[in-house]
Structure formats: C-alpha cells, structure tokens
Length: 284
Image 1 (tube, rainbow, N blue to C red):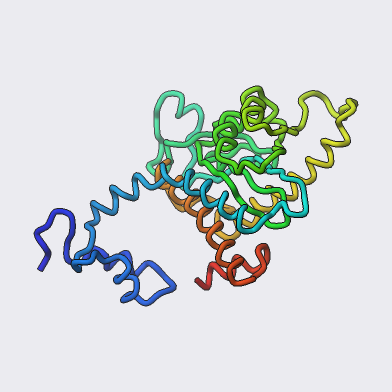
Image 2: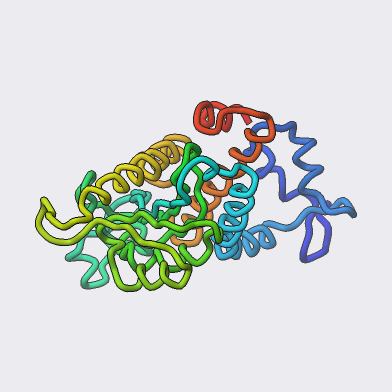
C-alpha cells in the first residue's frame, strides 16, 4: 500500500536502485531511505535533479581547490593552468540551419536547446561545449568547468571559470580564442599572466614567439590529453546520452566531479593518478 504523504511514497526507488551498479540493492536502499523509512517521490527526485546543475560548477571549483592543496601539483613546476573547450555532440539528429531560421523542427529527436560550432578537428558539429580549466602538471587535474551550447565563444566562458581558480595560479595558457580583452581583464584581476596564441598570419616574427611555442606545447599536453581521457572514460567520443541543457549540464559537470573524486580516492590509496582510471571507474 502506498503512503499518502505527498513528499514520500512506498517504493519509487525500485527503478533507481536496479539501475545503479556496484553495490547490493539493499545497501543502496539504505543510503537513499529517509530516517523514518520512507523514500522521496519521483517528483521530489525530478525537482532536486533539476536544480543540481546550478550547484555543480561551484562544487567542481571547490573540490579542485581542495585537490590542489592535497596533491600539490605545482611542487616542482610553474603554477600554470590551461583553459580550453571540447565539443560534445548532441544526442539525436541535427537541426539544419534553414529549418532553425524559421523555427521548424523536422524531427522529434533533435535537441533544440543547443547549437552549431566548427571544430578544427571535427568540422561542423551540432552539440555542446564543455569549457575546462586544468592544472598544467604531472596529474591531469580539472579545476573549473562549465557547459554551454556549442555556439558560445570560449572567450565569453573563460572569465567566469578563471574567477574560481586557486590563488596559487600565476599563468593562464590559452588558445587564440582566449586572446581577448575580457579574458585578459579576468587574468589581471587575479594578478595572473595570460599566455595565448596570437592572431594574424603564421609564422609570427615577434620576440615572444618561441616562448609562446613552449607554453602552447605545455597547454596541449595538459588539457588536450585530459579531454581525450575524459571522453574515453565517460563514453562521449560520440553523442552525449542526454537531451536538453539541464540534463546535459548535470551529466557533463557531474562527470567532471566524479573524475575529481576518483583522483582523490586514488591519492588516498597511493594509486597512479593518470593510469588505470577507466577500469577503476568501470569496476566501481
């Protein structure tokens, strides 16, 4: 018999616990049950899950600062971070421009909350951008994250990410798209130096070109390798498993938080922070 309470009901968790691997269902039920033995209703879950993505960027930044204090990633190198975005393909079909311009949705599978962008590696992509800041160090450590529709400019997303970085950061390594007044101003407010690729025809001939080349290589090794590992671990080399901005923010930013928690756990158990993360998560 179902309870009459509007907040809790007898057994709305049967579908949830059966879909969560890694622990016996009895253990999961114990963790998800209220002290009086009732369970939150499906409506309660939906309401709280809808608000979760707004809290995730702050949680990622907070845990990133804790991991910097714990792991000391810059103990033997410069205190630099890399900023970049990686494209995630939308689930379902794409929304052709000619249909989008007139507001016509030709198929119900199309995610109408996202947009187009062009990638040097993938060409035109319909989907999302995961904006990231990672530590330039031996461990690939994400420190800040945001998810937006794919047409959001990197230079518009970067300033907000830079506000949440640990105070120790002194150098911000960016791509050409980050060589913008708003990003430079955000670095100035944090007493940081922005080192970004220059606009104009290559090869550049100014005095700083060789120094920038070294930093660009450091940035590439740090954040682009992290992007590849992250997409492999969470199976997003193809499309994301979600539809809509709120569910996709919850999925992508939640995955960044899980990655951080994985690093924390492996550090506590003296395990490698770069090798073995994928099988570790699959076995969890």
